[in-house]
Image 1: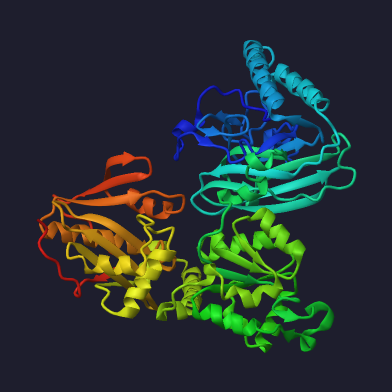
Image 2: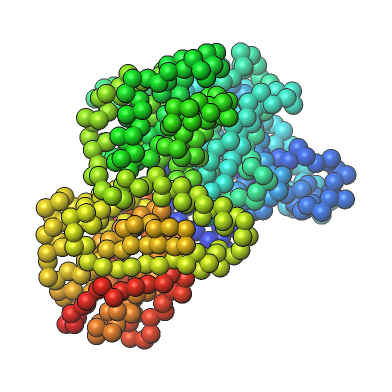
Length: 617
């Protein structure tokens, strides 16, 4: 339950990213929650002196300082446990704060209580507005808050074991951000966890290790706020301690833990393996046995090289001293195989999320190898879409379908390509240039050609089978179907190679365009995430539009099938002058007008000399 602002306007109506109604992923999976009242808070201030001398002071109607841009407002565009979302745009130092009661109510009385609270609040707000000329501080609202808090501290049952603390929210921020969850007792922090947020829905169920005297009324304060005082806009649809619904085997429902990040199932293929070190990659414990007494597990080094040959990336998540662990890996000759190793004392689930961000691949393509049942359980609870394996399963992994991926020359070089990407990132940081200016300095070159060899065909098929974020249709061909597509005389099939001043990306994309009808229709388009956000997509579609215009077409059609993962590609079409011809469910037909000149991207130099086209009818 939130203490909502009395603003009657819809503040998000003027905000970007208005969405259709969304359904909470916890709806129907929980039977009740702790009774909490979330309020606007800031504990960095010296109230009331800061109201006079602080440059960040923004006056609320009750003369207190507004730490949120428009308060906490119901957003009915989202569906949460209370049938709406709590829409918040944090100001600097703004926090959400709740006093823990330890008391449990089922969802039905919570929803009834919320309805009653809304009605009472509306009446009190009206009275406070009428009295505002003689009561500027709106003490009537303050009285309601006081007595409502006392009531909530007495409602519900005590002694209930909560299954999880759940945070579900929608982030409108284009760049990844971070949300801090903090538990305090008598002003002393007893728990603090950082949660990574991406654009769109984020769902977490972090396990909070509560102190033994958790049941004491009003003993603990819970705070949620953006890291680094960022001014984020979030819509919370769930923010509470929950009790999972118990069901019979016939009507089994998803567990809360299976809903983390909105995806309960792993992807079909593994793209990255995360290794634990102690008693997993090697026998022994680094801190206790010392580097010289460690020995590699039988078959571990061979497994590392086997995965690398298949283009399956690898990393490390280990609770150890970073420098000592890297020294041990170097002694075994394995340090170069691991990208973005997370060797620290943080949670492994959190480390995996950060590594996925840095590699720019989906978290459901990860697998963890770890000897500790505790660590495997922690990752499985927080990230149910990540596969977990014990240390004794190495021999069986080679026979599992999720590791059966095509071997190409590009896959053999995938790790080295990511290392080159690291050099690009460092060069950009050093240059301090504008992003587009930096891209131009990279001298990106895109070469288009027909895939005409077994090696090139295999690489294009691999992209189709593996790509998700930059995939026009998510259509998965098998080898025979792909050969049939390439042999179709009515289809223009284009492979893409990319280079820059740092090195060669290899074959990074594939597209098919149906030229058999009156208008050209792009049917397939896949692009490697290694060249994502480098304007390669814009360069290709600018070239395709201009080429089709020269061939006599009036429009270029795009046959787009939206998925939960291809939002980055959808954004490219939004940035270019495409219009929507029709939309039916997830199937969208877009069009680019070719009656005038088509704007070509000037960031990527494009070579189409190997492409020959027939006239479009």
